[in-house]
Image (cartoon, rainbow, N blue to C red; front, side, top):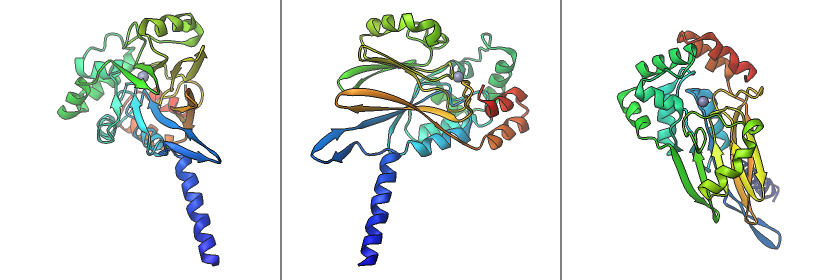
Length: 264
Ligand code: ZN
């Protein structure tokens, strides 16, 4: 009897934990059935394998979309590409991915260019081929409305930085030009969620090189309850020491390692 009660408690606790980690598309509440569809959006992984693994641990069971920049800055470009590919994560091309396959680093500062050249020399032929096939945008139906995802901006999908402090006036233009209710953008490494009139523009922040002062890996989870889309930015800690020491041992610029500790 006592064993049965203990077992029930363990199973209930496990169900609760699994639900909190995601993976359940529906939950049963007393007297009603509440829809809860969840999708994780990640971006700007930048060859930081430790950060990516931490985020994947938090998004088990969810579909995942990546808004680009798998490579550069970090020391594990091949492992990052392979993990994303093997997990079946739908991924867009970012400006750093584009540089890796085009060899064109003219728009980068000297440290970023050095990292790009280092990455180009190490990526396997198979991984370069995978990056070459990445699209510039996704347009998906999401719970009765259209969602649009790209790395930079809808006007310049690879290179434009969209900052809510300077671009909020453009959000209405993006939404109506595309005829969508939800837009996800990457590239700035700074997370935000902007909502107006039931429409949303958001940035999940960066998995591998956050720049908003919080060094934890950043990602977003989309959920729908009662037909309303909610976007929640989440953070998870990871082994920064390990990621930074690999960057240093590889001879990549010191700032690429040190900035991980401050999240800037
Ligand atoms: Zn980036």
